[in-house]
Amino acid sequence: MSRVLLSVFLLFFVTACATSPEGRQQLMAPAPLQGFSAVYSEFDMHLQLVTAADSPACKEAECVADRAFDQRILALGRRLADAAFRQHAQLYLRIPRFEFIVADKAEPGAASSSGGTVIVYRGLQRLNLDDAVLAFVLAREMSHVIAGHHDENVAASVLVAVAAQILFPVLNIGTLFAGGAATAAAGSAASSAVGTTAVTSAASFLGSRAVRASYRPQQEREAEIMAMKLLAAAGWEGIEVSEKLDSLRPTLPGESTWSLDLRESALRIASLMQGPPLPEQEEARDQIVSGLPYGLPPPLVSRPF
Image 1 (cartoon, one colour):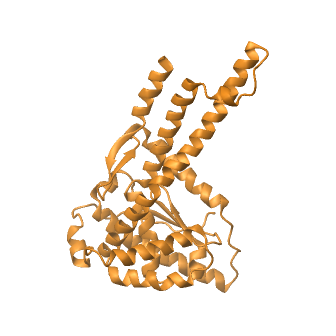
Image 2 (cartoon, rainbow, N blue to C red):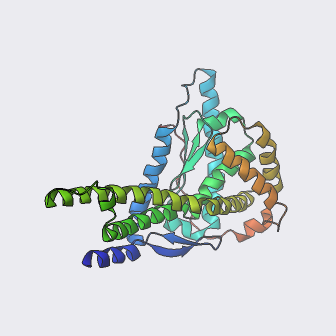
Image 3 (cartoon, one colour):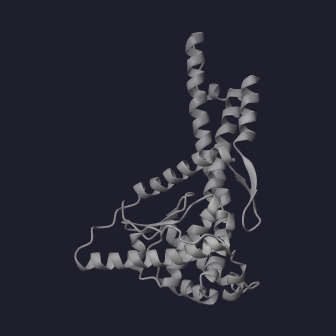
């Protein structure tokens, strides 16, 4: 019973309720665990990089083109980061700046972490995307950071892990998988413990994946809306961004998960532009918080992977 009470206490301690910038209720880790959330999110992002195929090393003129693309990402990132910190006054309390990295990965893609790191895959360069589309890709990842989606995913994973520690030992479910009847009491206890640990770990992993997958559609839509507002605040026309996104849909190579996500985003943005109007450039600038500190460290562009 004491174990159950301790687990229940931990269950409430590791989670807290928060409201996203778009008004959606979400689970968040409390302040004492924010450092763990950032480390977990960074590890998850690096895991994506490790599993992605490397891009071939550039040669001569290709290297010049790569550097030019890096500078485009830097310029777009600076422009968006400036608007983001002025649009969301509390963002300074969570991250000091955004960092933009171009990773030498063959497939097109992008990723981010709760600490403000935004990664663009080299494969995006091969698509010859317009600045408006590249800015949308960056703004969408930045919006995941601003909305706390990474922290929400970490909180959900911890919640499922703690719930598994409560549920499975109490129900003694591991004994169902520990094999037949044991001949010795010690052997039976050890077998049960191993079975319980294995089942608990599997349930924690699968449950975490399922919960995070259930959050994903809401997070994607929220990030898209926030990205369009961020682009408007940074000076882009919503119609222009939507048209550029729409024009690239038929020409996206392959059917990678990220490409499909971008294609679906293009459809939703086109639909969004048909609905209630998003803030125009002038209106978006009026909503930007003034009086925030200037002189932020510049965003970084590097290729460490």
